[in-house]
Length: 179
Image 1: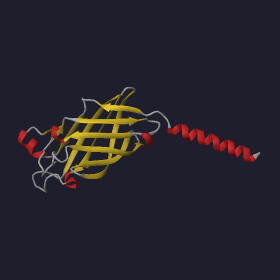
Image 2 (image 1 turned 90 degrees about the vertical axis):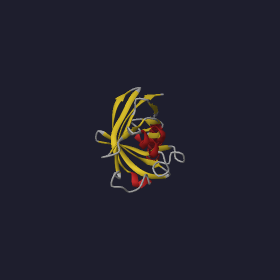
Image 3 (image 1 turned 45 degrees about the horizontal axis):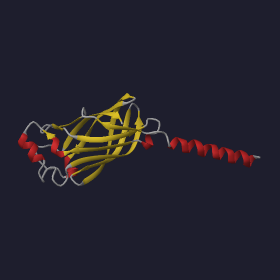
């Protein structure tokens, strides 16, 4: 009789754990209303072209995923000559590496923020970064906002300089709609 209860319990746990793995994931696409800005003493600016998806389920964060691509050609610093120089081989090398990419590996909740660990790829170099973001909205429209410091030297963007700081603060607001 004990074996019978043990087998029934095992089957019950298997069914429950399997069904949790198949909770529906909502797919969201980043809207054109996104904001992606970088700031330092000089230069500061933004990127104006980005595509991406967020697969998100608050009850199943282990299946959630963030995937973005930012066009280097869309950099805006307020100086046209600087924008062109940013695309040269010395800086972002936009011909060879036209996009900055971020793909998450894990998503966790930490207090009122989401801790998104993923691979940031710039100019042929990939580094693991942890991004903390605040979520707002629900239903068909959500948004994630936050900031992260990126060391441009880790990605061989430009040369060491007294004029351009190594650390760039990148702020983002990523509104997304359910698709």
